[in-house]
Amino acid sequence: MPHGIWRNSPGWMRHGCPGREKWPYSIRHRTRKMVNAMKTRIKNILQEKGTGQRLTITGWVRTRRDTGGFSFIEVGDGSCLANLQVIADSRLTNYDSEVKHLSTGTSVIVEGELKESPAKGQAVEIHADRIEIVGHADPETYPLQKKRHSFEFLREISHLRPRTNALGAVGRVRSRLSYAVHQFFQGRGFIQVHTPIITTSDCEGAGEMFQVSSGKPGAKEDHFFGRAAGLTVSGQLQAEVYALALGDVYTFGPTFRAEKSNTSRHLAEFWMIEPEMAFCDLKGNMQIAEEMLKYLLTDVMTNCPEDMELFDKFIEKGLLKKLQDVVDQEFAHITYTEAVDRLKSAKKTFEFPVEWGLDLQSEHERYLTEEVFKRPLTVTDYPAAIKPFYMRVNEGGKTVAAMDILVPGIGEIVGGSQREERYDVLVSRMEQAGINLADYQWYLDLRLYGSVPHAGFGLGFERLIQFVTGMANIREVIPFPRTPGSAPC
RNA sequence: UCCUCGGUAGCUCAGUCGGUAGAGCAGGUGGCUGUUAACCACCUUGUCGGCGGUUCGAGUCCGUCCCGGGGAGCCA
Image (cartoon, rainbow, N blue to C red; front, side, top):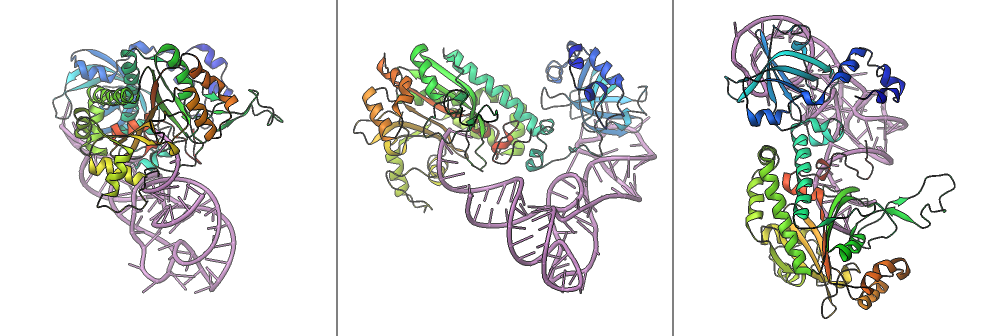
């Protein structure tokens, strides 16, 4: 750890935490001497199984079992789901004083030899000749136990929950999916655009914006940016700017909605992937969305097999089969008009009315994707009146070139459209929507100078992770969920 | 925001007709030479979500607020 960190830290950091006087300065010195390259990650050890080697591992004690003169200690370092079993016996100088009291959550450095394990349950284990306790975790107060906890409880300790099997697996799968998103687009020549997080344009129809102010006293009316600004609800409009310059682009960033939505599928802060493609129509849009979803599912099943097995076994039985079926089958496709006909002739009775011109309700979407088609379903060509101004008006003027991809269990996971590229049509749609044209002249300019047919969509990253992991509540698939009334750390 | 179900030990939950609270797990101590949610014995743990009310007496009944689950709307 660089010296400067200590010099610039508050006093309690340099002299020890208040109430933590038990832990002497020596811990700090040991930490400062630590060399990152010394340690071997457990994931690599389990892959290579190089028995006979002397290794150093670092991690947190998951559980300890004593038997006669020695102990089994399971240590996890977060690199993978599996722990490494450490054999510790009385030859260790601190065996009686420290090792026999090791409790869940304690951080340790273990040095020893990797050997083949004589018992079932693990192929290899490390026989320790040195175990250093780095940081204690008082078992009387440490909230995590070596047993199952409810996700509701874990949500209250979002700073500790990634240390559990399920939430740790979500963390790794999320990281892998994020990497795969970039691989998918970069591999197809898409260029990533960092669209603004603070924005002055409201992507109409995308929900309510959080307002941004400088927070300085008396500055309420005096807008920092010269006009009202908010946190982005979508990067789409700005992505269109770059699509009409660089061709195929995508954004992948945080998005904010000030809606008081209290459901298992909504967050006030979430991450969204938004590709935008020039010289592309609705068909091309649907194609790339389906290809992308299949690529991502295949990638995560290939590269996170242990984590995915955990979800398959404990979170959603049959998950892996469900995902493989999605990869193997073509997505179903119907138009909104056909969807309405199907719903009207369905034997099932719905709580909400089905009528051409009304938006499809959650129950309708769920019925179509879960009961009628039993696989992902793309619904296209919605009534113009219920969709935002930027969607391209179809011939006849009644519908727009919109598409929603619905998946069983989640509902809408992708929403997109071909964009209106005709200047005059766009202007009249904006006027109908009551939008101030002057504020959006930059957006209209794209149609004035070198306009081309273009299309794009938004994929809710957390909804994708929900679908991939089978986690029932979206608050479990983002590290620090922000929901109405809750943003603990 | 609306509907609905909840809040009791560190965790998961029981608590009958209103009479000052209980189980399993976790934790502690001891035992055990290969454990896998180890096992066996003994022991500890409470602002019954907050506030107010009814009552001789409230975990239990009433009001209100806070927090959480599920559903709806909005959407990704």
